[in-house]
Amino acid sequence: MRARVWNRDDGAATSVDQPECVLCGSADLTRCSDDLPRLGTREPSRFHLARCGACGALHTRPLPTAEELAEEYGAAFTWRPTPSVTTSLEAIYRRALVRVDHLRTLRRAARLAPGNRLLDIGCGDGLVISEARRHAVLAFGLDRADVPLWPGCAPEWRMAGNIDTTEQQPESWDIVSLFHVAEHLTHPIQILTRIHGWLRPGGILIVQTPNAGCLEATWLGGAWRGWDVPRHVVHFTPETLSHTVRAAGFEVVALQHLSWRDNATCCAGSLLPTFDIRIDRQAMRRAPSRRSPLVTLGRRLLYAAVTLAATPIMLIEAAFGRAPTVTVLARKPMRRMDEMPLASA
Image 1: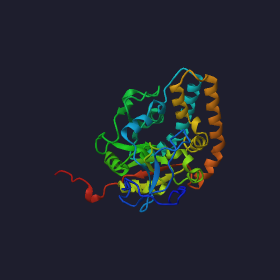
Image 2: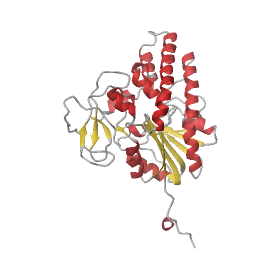
Image 3: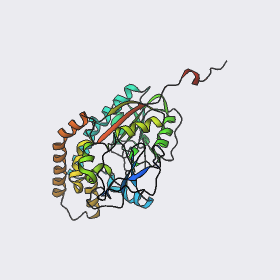
Image 4: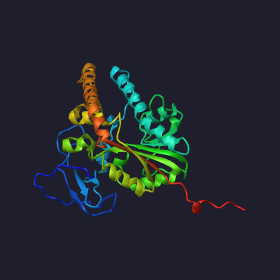
């Protein structure tokens, strides 16, 4: 199933300036959307979607410049502990969602994997790895060194590095997770192929991304929060994500569509773009004296109320595989007998 995207007003299929599909290598890419708004706005940007005619993958075009990416990955996208009621409530909320969402997936992976040694790529402040360690998973993370650590995360649990350049010992991990990372990668198959070498035979890969084939993407068009241009450069469906992990040498074990953390909040962020917590946090940092704490608390509560109201709809969408998030669990195949090292005499 291909993601359904609204057509341009003139109905024309326009060639794009960077024609190679990063998933299948086809040059058959055509523009299939109007210019999309950046996260938190309704104003069109210079970015649009292009679809691969061969595999159906969706790409952001043109690709963002290094300067644009540096601006998009600003401090507002990182949670920082501050002495306020709003921040304390947000911390409780985040921890609760990690426990009912990420840990459910990590526990499932640990049951399938040959061991419990986990590398969480793009771990951010380390909340996921600190909670995983509370539940008997030997978790470590990889992310930028300048991201503040979650209060319960020890510095030695997080490695500083970039997924494009970091190196790991071959077959040194049992589980590798990428929660909302793959959509940011310009060469996802090459990255996952490298990760394949880091996993032990039988090891489990977890990849979670927005689902460009969800009902919201169809209904809301450019207003869907999951496009998040230009930070998201590839837009996956369950089919294209499964193709990607298989192309990297993995066997798909399971597809999950239920995400307590992301499905309903994606809906809320689409309907109330300026209330998205990251966007709201950015606005507060630009003008910290212009808003009272009560107004901020009220905005958070309204956002939470819309999220709660959207949850039943998201559960129905997940049951039909059309929710805003998709997670793939995939296994590195065990070695065949002819690949086993010979015992020394």
